[in-house]
Amino acid sequence: MNSDFANLRCKLCLILRLLLIFGLSLLATRQGFSESMPSPFVSLRSYSEICKQQALEKIGWEVQTLSEGEPGIFGDFPRCTQLAKGNLKLQLPAEGNPSRESLLDEALLSGGTSCAFQNQYKKAVTVATRKLQKNHLYWFTPFWTQDNIKLWSLKKEWQEIPCSGGNCFVPQALVPALDALKTSFYSTDCAAGLQIATYVAAQELFGSEALSQIVSLSEIVIGDWPVVQNSNSLTFGLRARKIQPRAGLAYGRSGPYSFAGVPGYLGAVYGESFLDNKTNQGENFLITEVSSAGAESFLNNGGLPYYKGYLSKFWESTQGLQPEELQALQSLAEMNRLKGATDLQVQRQIRESANVIVSNRAMQAAALLNDPFLIDTQIYVHPVGVQSIAWHLLRLAQLNSRTPYELFFYADTAHAEIFDRWLTLQLRNCEPNGLSSSPDKINSGAQSHHSF
Image 1 (cartoon, rainbow, N blue to C red):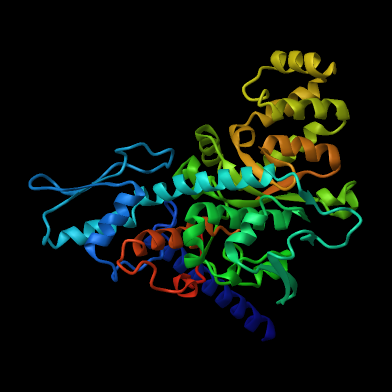
Image 2 (image 1 turned 90 degrees about the vertical axis):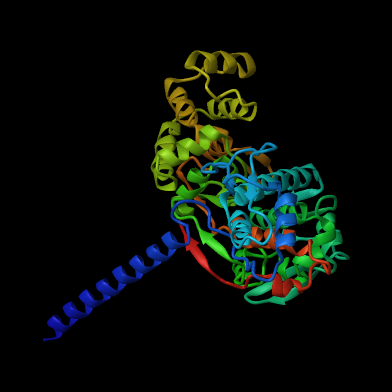
């Protein structure tokens, strides 16, 4: 009897699980998440037609009112790359036509506006990571301290306070605190380095003048992962709207620019007993750039699940290699000389630069790294700055040769919370009173987590 009941209960649980998956998939499909990046979570009802048109023109749309001809949105944006003048075109019917406002709304929520955001956010991420990388006073946490974060000369701009799960650091004043991160002496691990990079990128995107109007002090939080994830952090906190990348295929479908600003982790597959250098168990990173070929390769190969097996195969090819071989290959990757190079070209370059004889096994490793996604994807990791994923794999193969590494993407706020606020800023700046709500009200507060 108990066995029959258990079997029935198990079947009911399975049915409920399938219904839940089906319902979530249907919801995702209806809202456009299965095909591309999600639409912004912004209410357009409170804005006038004039304001919407001004916002679109500021974003980069060419808006025309027709006396004759067919109104509509012109331009195809299945894959977002660099936008040029004239890529975004909107033709509106005459004023008073009921379809005029619906076309304005459609353009604001379209792939064209999403692509315009991705263009601007990519620039912001590039500028932010470059500024952080140029700060030679920003160190990795010294081995002699147990604290992951030491804000040595930042005590005037930042304060340490109790947060859920431990202590964290928050700014005294928003813009001075973020500006100080680019020039002052302090040290963090790479997890806090990733948090800082996303905050500075937000500052570059919104601009220092508007930042305090769209982001509140309590949303800039630096700390250990559990603390930050339980906070109000703009980019990693509980309240921020996120999308769950899973395989990450929507990035590949949406084009190379959609990868910019995506956070992730390159982590050891095996446990601590296989680590010779525990400090480099993993690297928290922020993607700064992916080439068109890299995005295409990522999509065609099936995304992250494919690269899990691929990185394991690469690790196998490094077993037994001499440290000098790996160092020589890493030097070539840093100079971007591995990309597209033949075996003979790689061997010649290594002989000329390092005077190292390269084994066939090393050539196999080099060939595997020539995958467009690995060789062309640039990631920011504190403290080494911006390098390709291929470069990082060669570095980690030297430090922890007994374990393969695996690639993950974190829950992404760039295409959700940050996009929402960016579009909100464009709309509210065109109203007579500017931004009429406090940052807390601007926060979508949706806590929605979409997967693709």
